[in-house]
Amino acid sequence: MPITRDCKEVRDFAALFHYGTLGIAKTAQDLRADIERVLESGYAFKAYNVDMVRARLTKELLDGKMRLHVPTSYPLGNLTLKKKQIDLAYCLKVGVDESCVCLNYGAIVSHRYDLVEHEVRTLVDEFEASIELAFVIQATLLNDCEIIDACRAIGHGGGTRIKLNTGYSWGTSPEEVALIRRVFGHAFDLHPSGNITTLKQVDEFLALGVNNIHSLAVFEIVDEYIARRNTGMGSEQ
Amino acid sequence: MSALKQAGKSWTQEELARRLDYANLQVDARESDIRLLCLEAERCGIPTVWVNPVNVALASTIARGTGVKIASVVSYPVGAYPPEIKELEVLDAVEQGADEIVMLMAVGVFLDGSHDQTRREMDGLVRAADGRPTGIIIEVTALSNEQTICACEMAIEVGIDAIVTSTGFRPGGFPDATAADVERIAAATGARIDIVASGDIVSANHTLAMLEAGAARVCTPAARAVLEELEPCTG
Image (cartoon, rainbow over all chains, first blue to last red; front, side, top):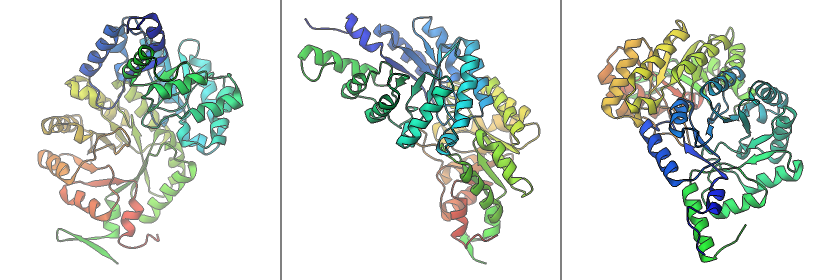
């Protein structure tokens, strides 16, 4: 029997994704139109992502139908720890459900993992009870050793979720996810992000035990999933 | 001393250096990169370096006693923060030792037509900078001519010192401003506010074209290379 967008199976698949409207020149009108599209689709994505300046409006538009995600220090991680605390305090006030915090990449590439651990520890201690935090390592900038050491520092700081890239054009590869899995097993909830635009890519991440994928192409990917199921073509999860 | 001619004006290295801001806003800037930035600015006679907030305290310590000023780039590279949060970021930058503040406008909010909010963020910048020089990045190529003039007039009214043309951020940003954009802003604002041309300006000719078009200064990640097109910076 053919499946459609309304099927539970399709909705469960769509629920694996983070989706949203981010960017320097995105207007309130862009946001309203996009949220309208999401709500009309009936998909309940894992969360809807917006820039901080749009957090209040988005909270209102989502009206409790989806979790709200606001990135912190996005996308460069270039803020002081104090400013990251200020941002998360604002998120808390507005009722943001989750945030991905871009780490201080200068510290990572300088191998100052003590600073990374301190940053993670401070934010986890202060906010994790109220806001679900993922830490962005920007894996594309790092070599394998730096990826491992950055993850270790996050773990030592009490972080349990790792987003591999900001998604700002820098993409995540399955090899990066596989590397972290090999070293740390399932100690971290891994969130691939960036340039994930096809079902084939999603298949590769799912095969690695990932269940939280950031993509702006989610509608196209879900359509591809439906088409594959209905034609019996391609690989299956 | 070598000199470069543009539109009939001859520029010495020293004159050109005084009109440059030297930026390192790289995502992976290391401590050594910030040291080099400050050292080269001092050697080449460049008055100001631009760094990300996380590097302001370090740059400030390195540059102490050299005469090089530290500009913190706030709300960069997306600008999409509420005004009250931007103001707190400016205060933080001041606390870290910033001598100047350059803030990216919330472009999307401005495009909404929410000019009250844009004015509030500009007011907050001036207030929190507490007398330090300020600049506002307007990402001119995201705006129409009318919107550009409107943003500039607002900046002038609240007392901001400089209009900065572009983020220069790649990927995902807008095209950089051209000399024609600078001319357009200069024609509309006259001498009421400085213009800082920024973006991917990495050659002496491009730099001089921006200055000739009316920019008071040019912010570049390649200041030393620009100056060394005239002669080596030995300082």
